Picture 1 (cartoon, protein in one colour):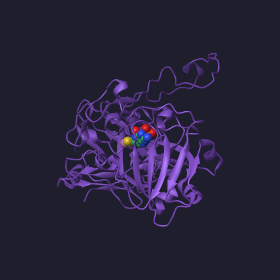
Picture 2 (spheres, rainbow, N blue to C red):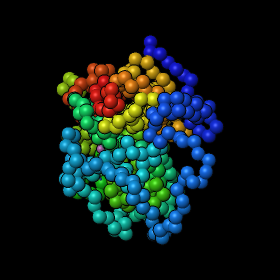
Picture 3 (cartoon, rainbow, N blue to C red):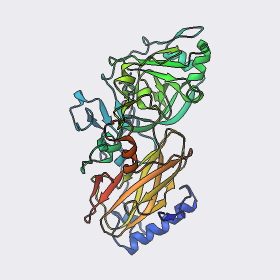
Picture 4 (cartoon, protein in one colour):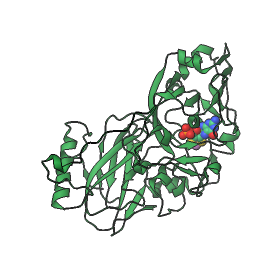
Length: 427
Ligand SMILES: Nc1nc2c(c(=O)[nH]1)N[C@H]1C(S)=C(S)[C@@H](COP(=O)(O)O)O[C@H]1N2
Ligand SMILES: [Mo]
């Protein structure tokens, strides 16, 4: 049995015990083990110790990032093909190693677009809803905005997230390379249940085809379970503003907890029927090759997962106090627990979860750690509120083999050498 320390299960929030525990270890680590953190708090009690005030720049039509901050997505063409010319890219990955909290800045939300970003005039755009329904409809984005709205913070994750580590681990990968195909935003739109009631879905029409308006012709069959009818929505808003073109302007499908590929962008058609369409995207693509050589189809839900973002690949740490932080997520529901090992999965400690913990959204975790300067391996594993625990790599590979490309969700291990260099390893 692995050792358990449940002393820090409290969430981190104002006045919570977890925050007090952190403060004590932080102060012990930063003064007792002097100089272990970059900017160790210095004793000071005079205004001469802080820079003087200066007049500011004029206000603009919108604000920009500080000129001292450089944060970029990485465009890539697919597995193993990194840092490509953006013209050839179909992915652009989120720089998780530079982000905090749980909401991905809109311009850094990962992107996967199979045929580029179409230029769609919302005045011309239409959504056709038809098939096995009583009253087919054509809607424009203003029609949607006039309907009752839902807003929800959810992750979108490409099934290709993690594909870099299926077969081998390139030690030079950052967490942006290994896990940059997941992001979390707040999306606003109209509930699928509302639209279904509007057109009068006929008995037996339990499948829906969602089709995009881009050149790629992405279309997917979606089973109309109660969960999906309750939770899916057609979004026109992203983090409080109209969708960005890269993310489906003027409307897209949001499918909380399910494959990124189902969140159809530039949505132009919803069609209802009594069986799936078996489109190219769910037969030739987005199926899983099992160890037996058979393919698994309609593996629609995303797994229980987590990753440490700090420290993570290519970073360098110093002995003494280090705060280990990352995020966890599950397509099944909310994150119930995240455990961290700083000794290569021999013993585990329960991490603090930052509030709020939202279902089917990224959840931030953190834990205090005093590194003794010896080479080690750090790893996280998450458990969701349905009882699913993220598998370690050997169990994951035993079940899924190495033929597959999608839905990689094994625990991510980072190795730390005696110089404090952090690198990507398989386990
Ligand atoms: N119409 C259309 N919808 C699409 C795609 C596309 O290329 N065209 N890519 C899909 C894939 S594979 C993913 S992972 C998500 C990515 O959404 P994002 O670019 O907003 O992150 O959109 C999905 N929806
Ligand atoms: Mo995807």
